[in-house]
Amino acid sequence: VQLQASGGGLVQAGGSLRLSCAASGGSISTYEMGWFRQAPGKEREFVAAIRWGPGGTNYADSVKGRFAISRDVAKNTVYLQMNSLKPEDTAVYYCAADRNFLPSRDSADYDYWGQGTQVTVSS
Image (cartoon, rainbow, N blue to C red; front, side, top):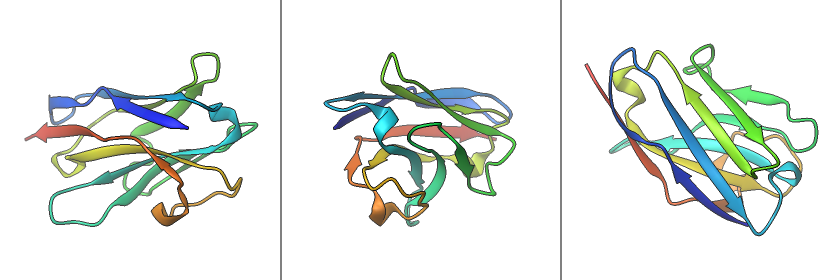
């Protein structure tokens, strides 16, 4: 499956952005779909994931209550709605797909990656 992330940009603290991850070559409903982020000088970290099939969700504690992951199976697209953004949310955001049908927060378990989209939150 090929993934194309978009929607990043520059926003003030407290603002919102919605990231999109368009998939091709496979249905997102058959993958665990995740969002990760990587800030300069830091390791890539888990942000959120949505399960294959019924689509249960999972969030990092740092974004719980502010971010929401969702999907539109008809459009084969996964979204990350980011509200109440903070400067510490600044990072390159990546979408990823895991074909192993197991929930995971470990980037090593994800098989396919998009190219990343930059999110910058100014204070």
